[in-house]
Amino acid sequence: MFVRAIEKETLRLLLEMGKSSHPNEYMVMLGAEDGVINTVYPIAGTVTSEDSASIFMDMIPLGMGLAGTAHSHPEGPYTPSDADLATFAETGQIHLIVGQPFDETAWAAYGRNGQPKHLDIV
Ligand SMILES: [Zn+2]
Image (cartoon, rainbow, N blue to C red; front, side, top):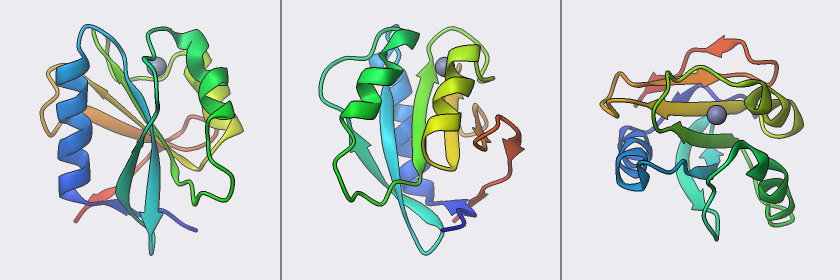
């Protein structure tokens, strides 16, 4: 599945979650239909450190159509950390990071190897 876009409502939800979980980080899985990200799968428990990525991987239900992940950088810019890049390489094809000030410009999407990806907002 080639992911080319994200629904506006889904993006809004991701930004809202960044705001409401602040100062903690959150992480969710993203589902897509026809190349458009339209589903957020919350993960049980609280993700508070970059080490949580491996726990996260164990929680992905079997058979789920996974587009990728989204998580927040509560204080920093929305560029991937080294730990993020390792997670990106393991799962999904598109990875969103949202950051301050959690408005509609405060996010970026990356591919498996960390290169920036363009996503249309639909
Ligand atoms: Zn990160």
